[in-house]
Image 1 (spheres, rainbow, N blue to C red):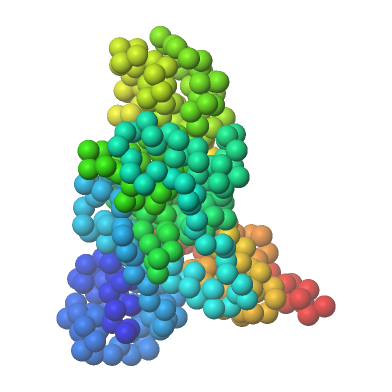
Image 2 (spheres, rainbow, N blue to C red):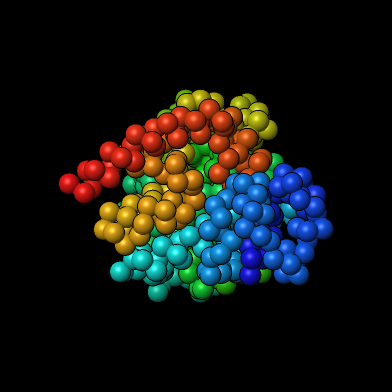
Amino acid sequence: MIGERIQQARKASGLSLRALAEKAGISAMAISKYENNQSIPSSGVILNIAKALGVRTEYFFRHVSVELENVNHREHEKLPQKEELKVRADVTEQLERWMMLEKFQPAPWSKPFELPADLHEQISDYDEIEDIATRVRKYWNLGLNPVPDLIDMLETKGIKVFITKYDGHKNFNGLSATVNDAPVIVVGKHWTGDRQRFTLAHELGHLVLRGRLSSLLDEENACHRFAGAFIAPKDMVKAALGERRTWLEPQELMLLKHEWGLSMQAWSYRAHNLGITSKEAHKEIWRSYLQKWKKEQREPDPQVPQEKTRLFAQLVYRALAEDMISESKAAELMGMPLFEFHACRMLKCPVETEQESKSAAAKGFNTKSAVSQHKVKRNARTGKSELTKKKRA
């Protein structure tokens, strides 16, 4: 069992056997034997491996195992196998912590994932997807107005959502899968908010449209159409843009982008798909200003705020507050060192800069700069005693 855990953590960090051996100060042959359960590492070796991989030692002794099934990637054809392994291992590790948390919770974390019973059983035209997206919104009581927080909404509908720090060298956007028949959606951490939202809706499309598409339709294109229609419904797009247009102003699209959390490029496609702009007008808009931003993979500032997951952390802190779990267990569930968790309890979590975030993604699990760790430890020493006194009181 411990061998599988070591291998999973190594793959998630993107390290080869030799690279891990060098960081842990042991031989690659020894690592290979540990991973194949031909040898059992000593407690000292486990500490060194945990430090090299940036995980807590408890990680190697978990008795929770999950497997991703029915995996669908957005832009999957561009994702190298090594990068895919990183993403899968990271998501699997986060899922294991979810499963551990559920053992301490007295009730299910959310209701089962459900879709309307009257959805089309067979979809033969992309235009039919507009109606499906609207039906799902209506069934979930979302109305037609903008959904401000997609992750929060999806989690309340029975979908576990995870954010991964790996971007596959800009080739990974997100994926959808199932675990024990429950839906899972994963989105990359480093993308802008509008791109994250489109990916979330795109992956929801995979879950909604699975088994319904005619062989004549491309699934990725169908999920693109669903994403746009789910974020910005047909009737609302026409109310914003009108029935016919020959040109769309950049500032106009920027305002709509921030109102709906849908990129300017996606808005141009919504207009074209709904017949608001002609093929010629659509091409001219792209030639004039959208094509440049697509190549840069970033539209002009200001950007839409990034999506965040909150439910898991809220449930961890609730379990801690109600003495269902210890502080050490809470830190393990949150996937952070105990000293860092102390600081977060006192609302003194270290602020991760964009550069530190990218560096952490390249190095593996939970890496922080030496300066950040020093600050967290210093805050934690004072915060721990204060919190303990308050709780006892």
